[in-house]
Amino acid sequence: MTVLTDELLLQKIIRGETQVLGVLYKRYSTLLFNYFYRVTKDYNASNDLLMETFARIHKYRHSYKPSRKVRPWIFQIGSNLLKDHLKKISKTISIHESDVQQIGVQPDRYSEISDRQRRTQQAMARLKLSERNIVTQYYLLEMSYEAIAETENITVNNARIKVCRALKKLKALLKDIKT
Amino acid sequence: MKEELFEKDIMDFVDGKAKDISNEEAALIGHDLKQIVYDLKSMPLEKVPTTTDKSINDFIKGIPQQKQSILRLNKWWPVMVAAASFALLILVFNQGNSLQDDYQILASNPDKLNFIYKLNEKELNGSDIAWLNSELKKENNPNIKVTIVDLLNNYQSKLDNDFIRQLEDESTPSVQMALLNTLEEIQYEDLNNDLWAFTERKNLDNMVKSKASSILSKSTN
Image (cartoon, rainbow over all chains, first blue to last red; front, side):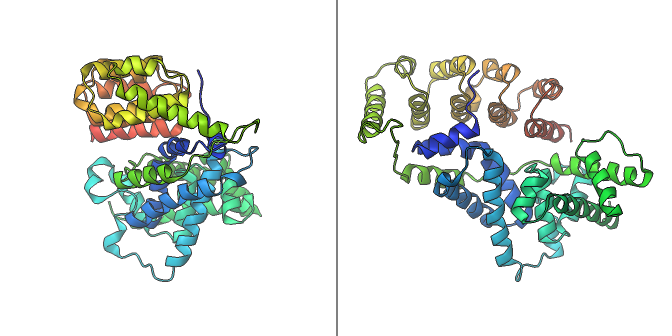
Protein backbone atom coordinates (compact mmCIF):
# COMPACT_ATOMS: atom_id res chain seq x y z
CA MET A 1 0.00 0.00 0.00
CA THR A 2 1.31 3.46 -0.89
CA VAL A 3 1.28 5.63 2.19
CA LEU A 4 2.12 9.27 1.86
CA THR A 5 4.01 9.94 5.05
CA ASP A 6 3.97 13.33 6.73
CA GLU A 7 7.60 13.75 5.65
CA LEU A 8 6.68 13.17 2.00
CA LEU A 9 3.77 15.58 2.30
CA LEU A 10 6.03 18.27 3.67
CA GLN A 11 8.51 17.71 0.85
CA LYS A 12 5.64 18.30 -1.56
CA ILE A 13 4.68 21.51 0.26
CA ILE A 14 8.29 22.67 0.06
CA ARG A 15 8.22 21.98 -3.69
CA GLY A 16 5.17 24.22 -4.00
CA GLU A 17 2.26 21.76 -3.90
CA THR A 18 0.49 23.95 -1.38
CA GLN A 19 -2.84 22.12 -1.55
CA VAL A 20 -1.12 19.27 0.28
CA LEU A 21 -1.09 21.52 3.35
CA GLY A 22 -4.80 20.69 3.52
CA VAL A 23 -3.95 17.03 4.03
CA LEU A 24 -1.59 17.85 6.89
CA TYR A 25 -4.33 20.07 8.32
CA LYS A 26 -6.79 17.17 8.19
CA ARG A 27 -4.33 14.97 10.01
CA TYR A 28 -3.39 17.33 12.79
CA SER A 29 -6.10 19.98 13.22
CA THR A 30 -8.24 18.04 15.71
CA LEU A 31 -5.29 17.16 17.93
CA LEU A 32 -3.82 20.65 17.85
CA PHE A 33 -7.18 22.36 18.39
CA ASN A 34 -7.89 20.17 21.41
CA TYR A 35 -4.40 20.77 22.73
CA PHE A 36 -4.89 24.54 22.55
CA TYR A 37 -8.42 24.32 23.91
CA ARG A 38 -7.58 22.05 26.82
CA VAL A 39 -4.79 24.33 27.95
CA THR A 40 -6.36 27.74 27.34
CA LYS A 41 -10.09 26.99 27.77
CA ASP A 42 -10.51 29.71 25.17
CA TYR A 43 -12.36 28.62 22.02
CA ASN A 44 -11.49 31.69 19.95
CA ALA A 45 -7.86 31.73 21.00
CA SER A 46 -7.62 28.02 20.12
CA ASN A 47 -8.98 28.79 16.66
CA ASP A 48 -6.47 31.56 16.15
CA LEU A 49 -3.61 29.41 17.41
CA LEU A 50 -4.60 26.57 15.08
CA MET A 51 -4.67 28.84 12.05
CA GLU A 52 -1.41 30.51 13.02
CA THR A 53 0.24 27.09 13.41
CA PHE A 54 -0.57 26.16 9.81
CA ALA A 55 0.41 29.59 8.56
CA ARG A 56 3.79 29.06 10.24
CA ILE A 57 4.16 25.53 8.91
CA HIS A 58 3.92 27.06 5.46
CA LYS A 59 6.04 30.09 6.26
CA TYR A 60 8.86 28.10 7.84
CA ARG A 61 8.60 25.04 5.59
CA HIS A 62 12.14 25.60 4.30
CA SER A 63 13.53 25.45 7.84
CA TYR A 64 12.30 21.89 8.23
CA LYS A 65 15.20 19.45 8.22
CA PRO A 66 14.43 16.24 6.32
CA SER A 67 16.28 14.22 8.95
CA ARG A 68 13.57 15.14 11.47
CA LYS A 69 10.10 13.70 11.85
CA VAL A 70 7.32 16.08 10.84
CA ARG A 71 4.95 15.25 13.70
CA PRO A 72 7.16 16.64 16.52
CA TRP A 73 8.13 19.55 14.27
CA ILE A 74 4.49 20.55 13.87
CA PHE A 75 3.77 20.06 17.56
CA GLN A 76 6.78 22.16 18.40
CA ILE A 77 5.48 25.00 16.25
CA GLY A 78 2.10 24.73 17.98
CA SER A 79 3.66 24.47 21.44
CA ASN A 80 5.85 27.51 20.87
CA LEU A 81 2.86 29.55 19.74
CA LEU A 82 0.89 28.44 22.78
CA LYS A 83 3.79 29.28 25.06
CA ASP A 84 3.90 32.82 23.65
CA HIS A 85 0.14 33.09 24.06
CA LEU A 86 0.31 31.89 27.67
CA LYS A 87 3.03 34.42 28.43
CA LYS A 88 0.80 37.19 27.10
CA ILE A 89 -2.25 36.14 29.10
CA SER A 90 -0.58 34.87 32.27
CA LYS A 91 -0.73 38.29 33.87
CA THR A 92 -4.41 38.76 33.26
CA ILE A 93 -5.89 35.27 33.35
CA SER A 94 -7.62 33.95 36.42
CA ILE A 95 -9.78 30.91 36.19
CA HIS A 96 -12.97 31.26 38.20
CA GLU A 97 -14.59 28.34 39.91
CA SER A 98 -17.49 28.52 37.45
CA ASP A 99 -15.05 28.13 34.56
CA VAL A 100 -13.20 25.24 36.09
CA GLN A 101 -15.53 22.53 34.83
CA GLN A 102 -15.16 23.72 31.27
CA ILE A 103 -11.57 22.66 30.85
CA GLY A 104 -11.27 19.94 28.26
CA VAL A 105 -14.87 19.02 27.59
CA GLN A 106 -17.73 21.44 27.09
CA PRO A 107 -20.57 21.21 29.65
CA ASP A 108 -23.06 20.10 27.01
CA ARG A 109 -20.96 16.97 26.48
CA TYR A 110 -20.74 15.99 30.15
CA SER A 111 -22.98 13.00 29.53
CA GLU A 112 -20.19 11.59 27.33
CA ILE A 113 -17.64 11.32 30.11
CA SER A 114 -17.42 9.36 33.32
CA ASP A 115 -17.58 10.93 36.75
CA ARG A 116 -13.89 10.19 37.27
CA GLN A 117 -13.03 11.95 33.99
CA ARG A 118 -15.12 14.92 35.04
CA ARG A 119 -13.20 15.17 38.31
CA THR A 120 -9.92 14.75 36.45
CA GLN A 121 -10.70 17.67 34.19
CA GLN A 122 -11.65 19.78 37.20
CA ALA A 123 -8.30 18.91 38.74
CA MET A 124 -6.58 19.81 35.44
CA ALA A 125 -8.18 23.24 35.66
CA ARG A 126 -6.53 23.79 39.02
CA LEU A 127 -3.04 23.17 37.66
CA LYS A 128 -0.84 26.11 36.73
CA LEU A 129 -1.01 26.95 33.01
CA SER A 130 2.57 25.74 32.52
CA GLU A 131 1.79 22.43 34.26
CA ARG A 132 -1.41 21.95 32.29
CA ASN A 133 0.53 22.64 29.13
CA ILE A 134 3.21 20.07 29.82
CA VAL A 135 0.70 17.40 30.88
CA THR A 136 -1.35 18.01 27.72
CA GLN A 137 1.77 17.82 25.55
CA TYR A 138 2.46 14.48 27.21
CA TYR A 139 -0.91 12.71 27.15
CA LEU A 140 -2.69 14.30 24.17
CA LEU A 141 0.09 15.10 21.70
CA GLU A 142 2.10 12.16 23.02
CA MET A 143 5.25 14.24 22.69
CA SER A 144 8.43 12.48 23.76
CA TYR A 145 10.40 13.86 26.69
CA GLU A 146 13.02 14.91 24.14
CA ALA A 147 10.45 16.97 22.22
CA ILE A 148 9.01 18.49 25.40
CA ALA A 149 12.53 19.31 26.57
CA GLU A 150 13.30 21.06 23.28
CA THR A 151 10.09 23.08 23.38
CA GLU A 152 10.39 24.03 27.04
CA ASN A 153 14.14 24.61 26.78
CA ILE A 154 14.92 22.19 29.59
CA THR A 155 16.81 18.91 29.85
CA VAL A 156 15.17 15.61 28.94
CA ASN A 157 15.44 14.46 32.53
CA ASN A 158 13.82 17.66 33.71
CA ALA A 159 10.99 17.20 31.22
CA ARG A 160 10.25 13.76 32.66
CA ILE A 161 10.34 15.13 36.20
CA LYS A 162 8.02 18.03 35.31
CA VAL A 163 5.49 15.66 33.75
CA CYS A 164 5.70 13.33 36.74
CA ARG A 165 5.27 16.14 39.27
CA ALA A 166 2.36 17.71 37.41
CA LEU A 167 0.65 14.30 37.30
CA LYS A 168 1.34 13.79 41.02
CA LYS A 169 -0.18 17.21 41.68
CA LEU A 170 -3.24 16.17 39.67
CA LYS A 171 -3.50 13.05 41.82
CA ALA A 172 -3.39 15.18 44.97
CA LEU A 173 -5.96 17.64 43.60
CA LEU A 174 -8.29 14.78 42.71
CA LYS A 175 -8.53 13.86 46.39
CA ASP A 176 -9.96 17.31 47.15
CA ILE A 177 -12.63 17.13 44.47
CA LYS A 178 -15.82 15.56 45.69
CA THR A 179 -17.57 12.86 43.66
CA MET B 1 18.82 12.53 43.03
CA LYS B 2 17.07 9.72 44.88
CA GLU B 3 13.70 11.36 44.24
CA GLU B 4 14.53 11.76 40.56
CA LEU B 5 15.26 8.04 40.25
CA PHE B 6 12.05 7.33 42.13
CA GLU B 7 10.14 9.51 39.64
CA LYS B 8 11.93 7.93 36.68
CA ASP B 9 10.76 4.51 37.86
CA ILE B 10 7.21 5.82 38.14
CA MET B 11 7.24 7.36 34.68
CA ASP B 12 8.84 4.28 33.10
CA PHE B 13 5.88 2.36 34.45
CA VAL B 14 3.31 4.97 33.33
CA ASP B 15 4.92 5.08 29.88
CA GLY B 16 4.77 1.30 29.60
CA LYS B 17 8.56 0.96 29.48
CA ALA B 18 8.54 -1.06 32.72
CA LYS B 19 5.94 -3.71 33.48
CA ASP B 20 6.19 -3.28 37.21
CA ILE B 21 7.89 -1.28 39.95
CA SER B 22 9.69 -3.01 42.76
CA ASN B 23 9.33 -0.12 45.23
CA GLU B 24 5.89 -0.45 46.81
CA GLU B 25 5.29 3.28 47.29
CA ALA B 26 6.31 4.07 43.72
CA ALA B 27 4.09 1.25 42.47
CA LEU B 28 1.05 2.73 44.22
CA ILE B 29 1.70 6.17 42.77
CA GLY B 30 2.51 4.68 39.34
CA HIS B 31 -0.82 2.83 39.16
CA ASP B 32 -2.76 5.97 40.11
CA LEU B 33 -0.90 8.12 37.58
CA LYS B 34 -1.45 5.54 34.86
CA GLN B 35 -5.19 5.65 35.57
CA ILE B 36 -5.17 9.46 35.41
CA VAL B 37 -3.35 9.41 32.06
CA TYR B 38 -5.81 6.82 30.75
CA ASP B 39 -8.77 8.98 31.82
CA LEU B 40 -7.27 12.05 30.17
CA LYS B 41 -6.48 10.18 26.96
CA SER B 42 -9.99 8.79 26.63
CA MET B 43 -11.79 12.11 26.98
CA PRO B 44 -13.79 12.96 23.85
CA LEU B 45 -12.16 15.37 21.45
CA GLU B 46 -13.84 18.62 20.45
CA LYS B 47 -14.46 19.10 16.76
CA VAL B 48 -12.60 21.85 14.97
CA PRO B 49 -15.14 24.58 14.06
CA THR B 50 -16.11 24.46 10.40
CA THR B 51 -15.34 28.18 10.14
CA THR B 52 -11.69 27.36 10.90
CA ASP B 53 -11.67 24.63 8.24
CA LYS B 54 -12.99 27.19 5.78
CA SER B 55 -10.42 29.81 6.80
CA ILE B 56 -7.60 27.32 6.32
CA ASN B 57 -8.98 26.33 2.91
CA ASP B 58 -9.12 30.00 1.92
CA PHE B 59 -5.58 30.46 3.22
CA ILE B 60 -4.32 27.51 1.17
CA LYS B 61 -6.15 28.69 -1.93
CA GLY B 62 -4.57 32.10 -1.47
CA ILE B 63 -1.03 30.72 -1.58
CA PRO B 64 0.34 30.88 -5.10
CA GLN B 65 1.25 27.45 -6.44
CA GLN B 66 5.00 27.55 -7.08
CA LYS B 67 5.82 24.04 -8.09
CA GLN B 68 9.51 23.92 -8.97
CA SER B 69 11.00 21.55 -11.46
CA ILE B 70 13.61 19.39 -9.73
CA LEU B 71 15.74 19.36 -12.88
CA ARG B 72 15.31 23.13 -13.35
CA LEU B 73 15.44 22.66 -17.13
CA ASN B 74 12.74 25.16 -17.71
CA LYS B 75 11.36 27.50 -15.08
CA TRP B 76 8.02 27.64 -16.86
CA TRP B 77 7.59 23.89 -16.96
CA PRO B 78 5.82 23.63 -13.58
CA VAL B 79 3.50 26.46 -14.53
CA MET B 80 2.69 24.67 -17.76
CA VAL B 81 2.07 21.42 -15.92
CA ALA B 82 -0.19 23.18 -13.40
CA ALA B 83 -2.04 24.96 -16.20
CA ALA B 84 -2.46 21.72 -18.12
CA SER B 85 -3.76 19.93 -15.03
CA PHE B 86 -6.19 22.73 -14.35
CA ALA B 87 -7.33 22.76 -17.97
CA LEU B 88 -7.79 19.01 -17.84
CA LEU B 89 -9.89 19.34 -14.70
CA ILE B 90 -12.02 22.07 -16.26
CA LEU B 91 -12.37 19.93 -19.37
CA VAL B 92 -13.48 16.83 -17.55
CA PHE B 93 -15.92 18.80 -15.43
CA ASN B 94 -17.61 20.35 -18.42
CA GLN B 95 -17.97 17.48 -20.83
CA GLY B 96 -21.07 15.89 -19.36
CA ASN B 97 -19.41 12.47 -18.95
CA SER B 98 -20.08 10.42 -15.84
CA LEU B 99 -17.83 11.27 -12.91
CA GLN B 100 -16.36 7.80 -13.13
CA ASP B 101 -15.33 8.31 -16.78
CA ASP B 102 -13.83 11.69 -15.97
CA TYR B 103 -11.90 10.35 -13.02
CA GLN B 104 -10.41 7.42 -14.93
CA ILE B 105 -8.44 9.67 -17.26
CA LEU B 106 -6.64 11.43 -14.40
CA ALA B 107 -3.22 9.90 -13.97
CA SER B 108 -1.61 11.68 -11.05
CA ASN B 109 -2.66 11.66 -7.40
CA PRO B 110 -2.72 15.50 -7.11
CA ASP B 111 -5.13 15.62 -10.05
CA LYS B 112 -7.28 12.97 -8.45
CA LEU B 113 -7.24 14.87 -5.15
CA ASN B 114 -8.25 18.09 -6.90
CA PHE B 115 -11.02 16.25 -8.70
CA ILE B 116 -12.44 14.84 -5.47
CA TYR B 117 -12.13 18.24 -3.73
CA LYS B 118 -14.07 19.82 -6.58
CA LEU B 119 -16.88 17.32 -6.14
CA ASN B 120 -17.79 19.21 -2.97
CA GLU B 121 -19.27 21.82 -5.26
CA LYS B 122 -21.58 19.31 -6.95
CA GLU B 123 -24.71 17.49 -5.84
CA LEU B 124 -23.90 13.80 -6.09
CA ASN B 125 -26.50 11.15 -6.91
CA GLY B 126 -26.77 7.54 -5.74
CA SER B 127 -24.60 6.10 -8.50
CA ASP B 128 -21.89 8.71 -7.86
CA ILE B 129 -21.86 7.68 -4.20
CA ALA B 130 -21.70 3.98 -5.10
CA TRP B 131 -18.78 4.73 -7.43
CA LEU B 132 -16.97 6.69 -4.69
CA ASN B 133 -17.47 3.76 -2.33
CA SER B 134 -15.86 1.43 -4.85
CA GLU B 135 -12.99 3.89 -5.38
CA LEU B 136 -12.52 4.04 -1.63
CA LYS B 137 -12.19 0.27 -1.59
CA LYS B 138 -9.62 0.00 -4.35
CA GLU B 139 -7.66 3.24 -3.85
CA ASN B 140 -4.23 2.86 -2.26
CA ASN B 141 -3.44 6.49 -1.58
CA PRO B 142 -4.53 7.42 1.98
CA ASN B 143 -4.87 11.11 1.16
CA ILE B 144 -7.31 10.41 -1.62
CA LYS B 145 -9.17 8.00 0.63
CA VAL B 146 -9.48 10.58 3.43
CA THR B 147 -10.76 13.12 0.90
CA ILE B 148 -13.34 10.64 -0.40
CA VAL B 149 -14.51 9.84 3.14
CA ASP B 150 -14.84 13.55 3.94
CA LEU B 151 -16.85 14.04 0.76
CA LEU B 152 -19.12 11.08 1.54
CA ASN B 153 -19.66 12.50 5.01
CA ASN B 154 -21.93 15.06 3.34
CA TYR B 155 -24.22 12.24 2.20
CA GLN B 156 -24.66 10.35 5.45
CA SER B 157 -28.26 9.34 4.77
CA LYS B 158 -27.20 7.68 1.51
CA LEU B 159 -24.31 5.65 2.95
CA ASP B 160 -24.92 1.92 3.12
CA ASN B 161 -23.12 -1.25 4.19
CA ASP B 162 -20.47 -0.81 1.49
CA PHE B 163 -19.26 2.27 3.32
CA ILE B 164 -19.69 0.85 6.82
CA ARG B 165 -17.58 -2.20 5.97
CA GLN B 166 -14.62 -0.05 4.84
CA LEU B 167 -13.31 0.16 8.40
CA GLU B 168 -12.78 -3.62 8.49
CA ASP B 169 -10.18 -3.55 5.72
CA GLU B 170 -8.59 -0.21 6.50
CA SER B 171 -5.16 -0.14 8.13
CA THR B 172 -4.02 3.49 7.71
CA PRO B 173 -4.65 5.59 10.86
CA SER B 174 -5.59 8.80 9.03
CA VAL B 175 -8.22 6.95 6.97
CA GLN B 176 -9.42 5.04 10.02
CA MET B 177 -9.91 8.35 11.86
CA ALA B 178 -11.86 9.82 8.94
CA LEU B 179 -14.07 6.70 8.75
CA LEU B 180 -14.67 6.73 12.51
CA ASN B 181 -15.73 10.39 12.39
CA THR B 182 -18.37 9.60 9.80
CA LEU B 183 -19.47 6.29 11.32
CA GLU B 184 -19.95 8.07 14.64
CA GLU B 185 -22.36 10.46 13.01
CA ILE B 186 -24.27 7.78 11.12
CA GLN B 187 -24.96 5.81 14.35
CA TYR B 188 -26.01 2.64 12.51
CA GLU B 189 -27.40 -0.36 14.39
CA ASP B 190 -24.30 -2.55 14.67
CA LEU B 191 -21.85 0.29 15.30
CA ASN B 192 -20.99 -0.85 18.82
CA ASN B 193 -20.33 -4.47 17.84
CA ASP B 194 -18.15 -3.37 14.94
CA LEU B 195 -16.21 -0.97 17.14
CA TRP B 196 -15.64 -3.54 19.88
CA ALA B 197 -14.14 -5.85 17.27
CA PHE B 198 -12.13 -2.97 15.81
CA THR B 199 -10.60 -1.92 19.15
CA GLU B 200 -9.37 -5.48 19.67
CA ARG B 201 -7.09 -5.17 16.64
CA LYS B 202 -3.39 -5.45 17.25
CA ASN B 203 -1.10 -2.52 16.43
CA LEU B 204 -3.96 -0.04 16.40
CA ASP B 205 -2.74 3.56 16.50
CA ASN B 206 -3.27 5.13 19.96
CA MET B 207 -5.30 8.06 18.65
CA VAL B 208 -7.51 5.77 16.58
CA LYS B 209 -8.06 3.46 19.53
CA SER B 210 -8.87 6.41 21.74
CA LYS B 211 -11.36 7.73 19.18
CA ALA B 212 -13.09 4.34 18.85
CA SER B 213 -13.19 3.95 22.65
CA SER B 214 -14.61 7.43 23.01
CA ILE B 215 -17.46 6.62 20.57
CA LEU B 216 -18.13 3.40 22.46
CA SER B 217 -18.15 5.09 25.86
CA LYS B 218 -20.57 7.72 24.57
CA SER B 219 -23.02 5.14 23.33
CA THR B 220 -22.80 2.99 26.45
CA ASN B 221 -23.19 5.87 28.93
